[in-house]
Image (tube, rainbow, N blue to C red; front, side, top):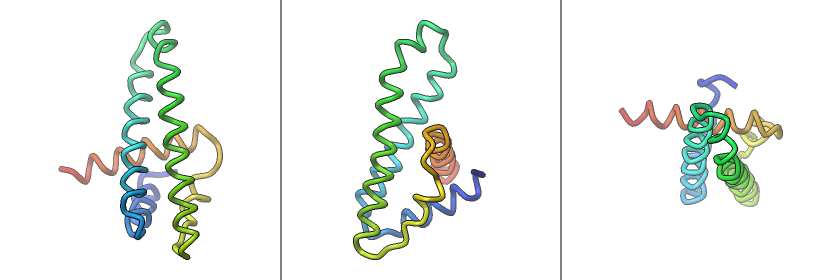
Length: 108
């Protein structure tokens, strides 16, 4: 996925009437991407120590995506963004990092 597509997906997510769930998804993305960045910068021993928290943050982000997608579908909102991010954990994690980048750039 490219940054442009992540930006478009974020805009669709933020148009949802489920504002709290959308915000929770973005917050989960930021938490996970921080864990992922820390893990990348860590040595082998530190990575082992960081793994459980990184996995938990990743699971929480995936859960947030699924919860918002289901809530949007339940009221007839377009949740096609969920299919676009795929089912593979690595790709979903990449999407979280791209969302974090979009949010960070938007905040300037």
